[in-house]
Image (spheres, one colour):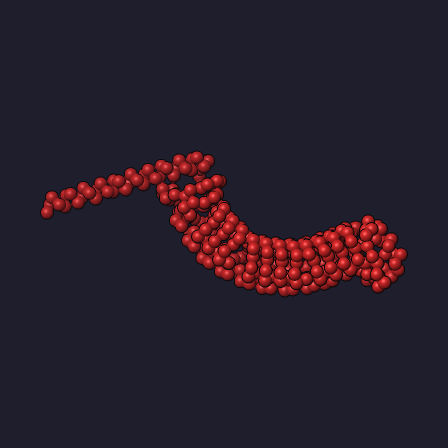
Length: 337
């Protein structure tokens, strides 16, 4: 079992090996530091042998083979990085962190010990979390809980002042997603069957690709970024957001027509859909920048738009022939009368 150094001289020598010069050792042997701390694996042996107090600078204890945060500061005026260890909980985590908290790539099954507020980004991705219980409630930057085993967003932060990233989990619903999100949302690679509980407005990108969506019902109405609904089972773009500021990617679905597509879009990806040839006549979308249509049987965008023009001409010709036939029939009927 790890123990702290009990002599001041031992602490001084250890701090020197860590290249830490600006510090105060209190009578209770708690160490306050006035510079960034970058702990070395060779001097830690899987645990931190002193008790830090306040660190005015970043505190980095990543990839040290730690199974506990015992010895970590109570307050960090900067970023706190403990990623790449063997942590199962966040107990003994600093109570106050003014910058980012990165506890990604551990063995976390619980976030117990996390502070209530994070001054920057919060990363708990690439762990073994099945719940967000004990999660910080205010994240002043981005929130990353991707690459876990979450089936629910219960206990999500109340406020996320950046992006909300929850891709690559086992979510079947967006229920309990944060009430206030100032950035985009990424819920790719989950098991969503609908977008119920999505916010009405998203202040960045909204990405729901690689789920099990058959409809866009409940999707946000306003997206101030791109909308990515590719790799689903969509047969229609009905309920598409009313406003999409940037890209629309609806590739690799089951779309056969251009019904419900927007009239104008920044960039558009329709690749990998079984678009019917006759549907090309109804392609009336103005694409301002980039356009992708691979996997539709056309070797280039130019070839695609040539096919669109041909189908439009054929459609107009058929409509003209139909009108002429109707007119001729009407004339014959009048003569008979």
